[in-house]
Length: 323
Ligand SMILES: C[S@@+](CC[C@H](N)C(=O)[O-])C[C@H]1O[C@@H](n2cnc3c(N)ncnc32)[C@H](O)[C@@H]1O
Image (cartoon, rainbow, N blue to C red; front, side, top):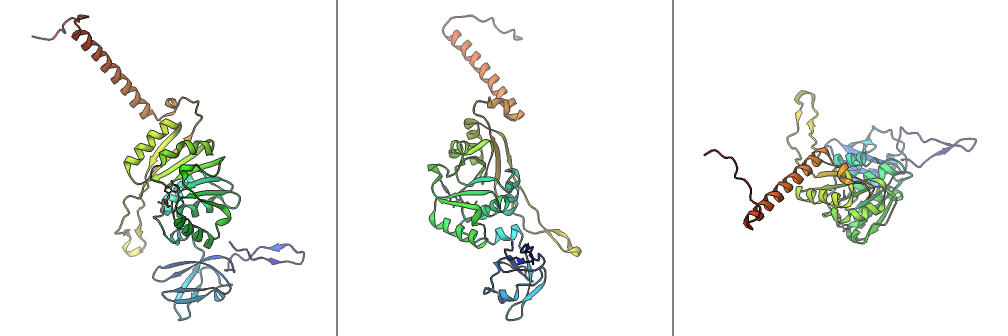
C-alpha cells in the first residue's frame, strides 16, 4: 500500500521496506480488548481511541506487529489490516454485506485485477470495498446508488481506504439503466433484482456472471422465474453459515453466538438469447418440467373425454372394474 519510495544512485526507485509502516499506508491499531482502528498513516495524523491518542509520527518506521503506545501510555499492536478488518471499519449508513459473503461473491464472480464489475446499490460501500480490492489496480467497479446521502457515506469510506481510483460511483436509480457496459459481472443488492435482468444482459459481456444477495426465499423464487424469462443459465442458490470458535487452547469450543442467516446468494450466467434455455436447466429442473408436461397432457385428455361424454358423443367402454 505504501507509496513512499527512496531513490538509489542510478535513480531507480528502491522498493519501500515492507517490514515497517510508512506515511500513506493503511494501518490498524489493535488494542488488548480486541478493538480495531483502521487508519491511514499521515505524518501529522493523530488517532483518538478509548485508550488515548496515538500520534502517527510515532508509528512511521515502526515494524508491523510491534507494540505502540498512546499518549497516556496504553498499548496497541500496529498491524496491516486484513480485507475483513477494512470492510468492518466502513462507516454504516445501511446494512453491509458480511465479509464471508463478500469473499465468496468475489470468488464466484471470478474477479481479479483488470475485471470490470457493475454493482447496485452501493449502500455503505461494504461490498464495493471488496470488489475494488479484487479488481485493482487495472480493473474498475461501476457502482450505482439512488440515495445521495448514502452515496456520500460510501464515497467517504472509499476515499479513506484509498479505493476511489478503482471505483466509478453514480448517484442514479438503476430503473434508468446501468452506467457501464462490456462488464465481466453484475452484482445486485437491491430488493427486486429480477426487474434489472434485461439491463444486466445488455451490460454484460457474452457469458458474463450475474449474482445477487437476497434475504428472503420469496424474493429468490421471483429471481429464479426472472432467469427463465431472460435467458440466464447455470443457476445456483447457496447460503454460507460461518461458525466461529473460541480460540483458547484450554477451552476450545464453538462461540456462544451464531449468526443464523445473512442472505441467499444467487448466481447465474448470461447465455446467448438464441439458445434453447430448457436444455441448459439443471437436471432436476428438467425432470420437474417433464413431469408437469405429462400431468398437463393427462388432465387435457381427461377433460376431452369428460366433454365428449357430456355432449353425448363418443362412447367409452365401461372400465372392467370388479363387482
Ligand atoms: C442493502 S444496501 C447495499 C449494501 C451494500 N451491498 C454494502 O455492502 O454496503 C441496498 C442499497 O441499494 C440502494 N438501492 C435500492 N434500490 C435502488 C435502485 N433502484 N437504484 C440504485 N440504488 C438502489 C439503497 O438505497 C441501498 O443503499
